[in-house]
Length: 204
Image (cartoon, rainbow, N blue to C red; front, side):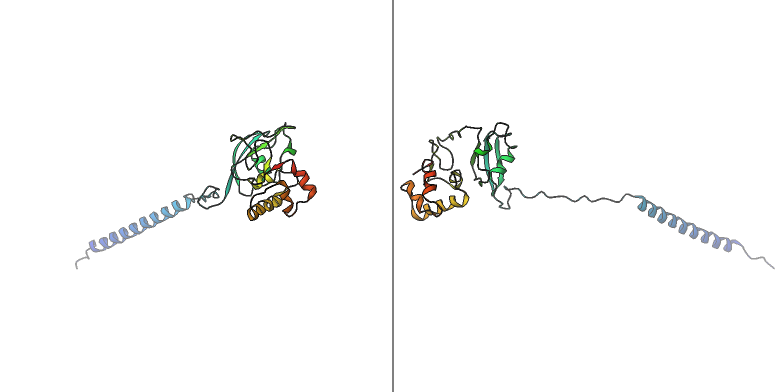
């Protein structure tokens, strides 16, 4: 009787071993990939912070430019918010210098675009502007012209705050030019005593 040929069995064993090796290699490859993915550092996404739009951006937010000079730490041209006051302009310029006279400026007054803000030393008078007079409607003689002064100039007068300055301008717009200083009596809030305080500080 002829013995069975062992070759087919050996071939089956060889194919099975090859399949096992392929599967084992695939498993090792997958395992290596998982280990690498776990070991890889996690990417940290840093958020990009967009700066708030400045006054000169396309958002239309208003700004004013004020030239601060005199007795301040860092005189210069400063860009401020539209509702900024003199105290903000002085702060932007580094604050008062050691020789400044803080009482020489109205810190509560709202600044205006293009204004030249002068901080004096004790007893010092503001200089004349390059055009021969102080900005905002004050003449070379230091008197405030009631017919040309803006709110900032009027606000420099004694006892005249932003609200009264606006009433003076409103009266001028409704009634035309002031023909005399006495016309101020027609403005609500101005009486005889206040007129006397203003008489030597204004002109028409």
